[in-house]
Structure formats: C-alpha cells, structure tokens
Image (cartoon, rainbow, N blue to C red; front, side, top):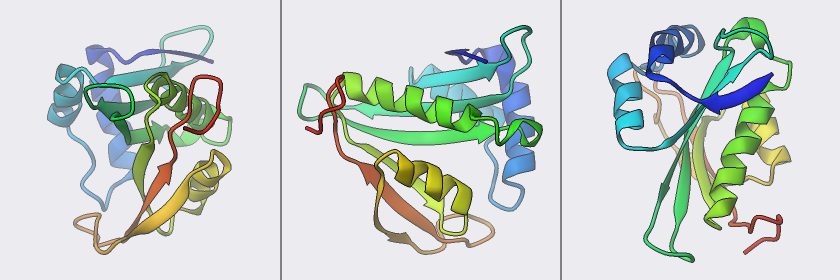
Amino acid sequence: MRLEPLRRRDIPRCVEIEQILFPGDDPWTSRAFHSELDAGHFYLAARPDEGDELLGYAGLAVVGRRRGEYESTVHTIGVAPEHQGKGIGKALLRALLERADEFEAPVFLEVRTDNTTALALYESHGFERLGIRKRYYQPSGADAYTMVRPARTRDGVAG
C-alpha cells in the first residue's frame, strides 16, 4: 500500500465511501472535499502498491502563524469497508501525525463515542479524551468525544 496526495478525481470515490461509512451522520459531499482541497489542507489517498484504486483517505488542517502557535485538526479518515482491518487507517493516521509534528502542533479530532475501533486506534497513538460533544453528529444525534494528542517534535518528543 502507498500513500500519496488526494487528487480531485478521487473525490467521487471518497463520497461513495463516506455514504457507506456514515449513512446516518451527514456524510461529506463532493463540495466539502473540493473545499478542503481548495483551502490547501493536507489530504492523502491510500492506494494498493499496484493500481490506482482508492482504498482510503484522510485529511488534516494546520492553522497558526509561527512555531508554538500551530494547531491541527484531523478532519476525516475513511477506509472502504472491504479494506478495513489491514492497517490502512493506522497508516493514514500516522502520516497525518507526522505532518502535524512538522509544525510541532497538537492534534485535535472528534470521534463518535460508540466507535470503539477508532477510539482504540486514536488512544494507541497518544490521544486523550478532552470532553464530550452532545449530539455532535447530525442527523443521528450521536455524541462525540473531543480528543487531543499533545504537540510533538519531528523526533517524537512531546512539546
């Protein structure tokens, strides 16, 4: 499997995956993905070593003006159901974290409180629960945890 920048021609497949993964929670639209790429956020595609199939995708936004002021947010991670359990989500997350580490930025995210697989992944990568957002996901009304991984330098040392 290889990771590379997400391309605009990947967006229709991203939308399909979103609809499968998040049917009751307002999955992202084509417009949302285009907006993220237009904003210059860091988006990756996971593909097989051979071929062009989109196995999964992930995106991170980094904001701030100088070192010590940067913050980052995981906007999305999605892996097609037929490719889950193969380490693709973990590889995507690690790549996002490496990008955040280039800025020595803490990393924030929201995750459904009942998504035990994602919670385990995030916690295994140093994320801690900060709080809960009631009825965060719409229209389902599912709650979300807000999580953070403290800032780290490129060599992995906490900032």
